[in-house]
Length: 384
Image (tube, rainbow, N blue to C red; front, side, top):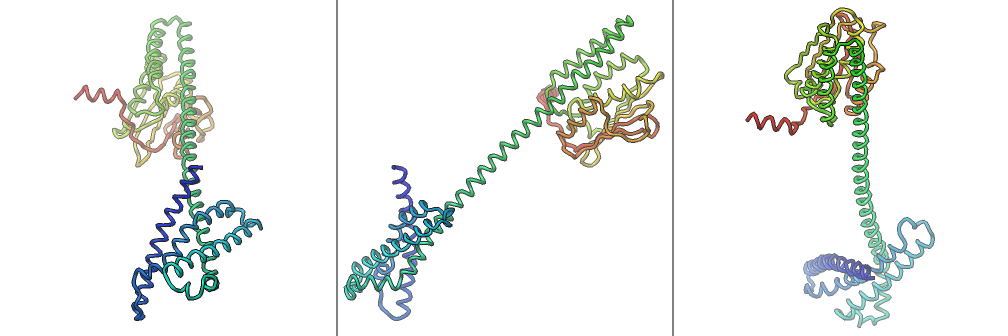
């Protein structure tokens, strides 16, 4: 009840201000037109002539808005809604002309006394009825315009909030998918390494087993400490170096690794644990199946707005000698899925024959500088 009273008072206040401004504008027009016509009409008299009808409009505005609220535009096709507005327009017009005529012609003028109250009412009704009916529907139209404008803004705000929540949910789901994919690599890599350790243990090579277990513990510690989805290529190469130490213990002097990194590429942001499964794939299919020595090359560079990484081996190459998709094993399939999550379709991952023999994995994705970590900040502060 109290809210309804406040709302009505606010409507009357706004209507009174607007109608007063319009009434003063009309009074000024009447004043200047009378002066131009050579008739003596004071501004006060011009105001008394025009203002009553606008004050009555302000007073009757809550009635019009109440009808518009009771019979909204959505129900205009119903006969009852149309009849209600037509009836309300007639009532409004009669009341408006009656009150405005009384104020204007009986209180502020002598026209009412000249024609009499009833005669003056019929005279004004014949002159202004149609105009006042149009005035009623104009007020209704303004109210509907305000209501639908507010509803549109509310829908836009709700849609924006929904879009933000959907984006947050999508980002959360994407992070969950990436984390699940990343966590698949740890048991996959651990299983392969422990399998190698068990083979060496069966052969009685205690020293090599001890070195591999030590390198494996360092590698797992780094893996568990890093919970980020992306990191700099420099950090990724540091992690890969631990893995290659294990493989070099396994193959002794047979395995040679060459790393060629363009300086600008060191700070590129790359998916964490991206290189390890690619290099592991090169070791498994391009080197471990051969008897003699072999070489794995890792080339990283920035080409325009793309990071390009190539991992090559000197093994037997692809079985059919043709380009293939990025393999069907856990490591490369996982890497492709993570690149898809991070970059959508803006990446490539190809497994092709190397021109000089062997196989090559080519990866391209957008360049983005990796953010500086707290550990790097501490190192920079220490160096300073």
